[in-house]
Every structure is written in structure tokens, then in C-alpha cells.
Length: 102
Image (cartoon, rainbow, N blue to C red; front, side, top):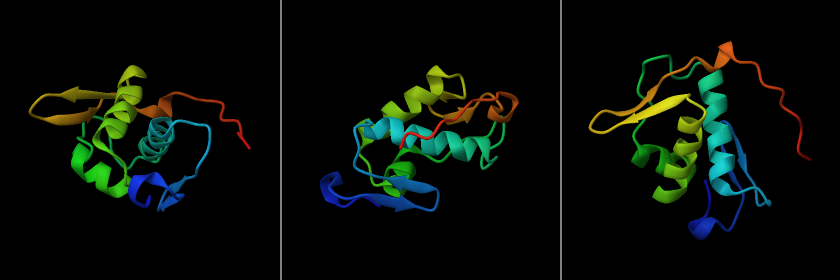
């Protein structure tokens, strides 16, 4: 996890959140996208609440909301008031070319 105030690299079971020029919310969105691709949450399932994701990734509420907004923009999830964030598209049906950034 990130140390307070995001001063150090964070390592979760899914990857690291290193210091870089890439905004933190984009990094978190990428990690969540990988979990969707791995089938951690299936089509129609709710992902964990924002509070749980915030704690898991050690980020603020606004960072997590921005990360989820990225996934929503890509039509992978839909946020439903009173229900949570629901997986709306199987990301495995889409093929993305992922290039290394380092």
C-alpha cells in the first residue's frame, strides 16, 4: 500500500503503484481493468464498494472515483446509486494492444 500522502511505491497483489508521471487514478484504473480482464468480477456483478477499494489501494476517495470514472467511460462498469458499481461489459471480448511504458 501507499504510505500516507502517497510518498512511496505501493505493491498490491496485482501490481505496483510507483512514483511516475502517470496520474495515480490512471494507474489504479489500469489495475482494476486487469482484475476485470482476469475475471475477478463477472458481467453483472458488483465490484467492492469504493471504501474497500480505497483501503486496498491506499488511495483517496477522489482518486478512486476518478479511476472508476475511467472504467465507466470505457463502458466496463456502471455506477448505480444505492447499488454500487456493476460490471457492464466483458473486457475479455475486447482486445487491447498493451505496450510497455518503461
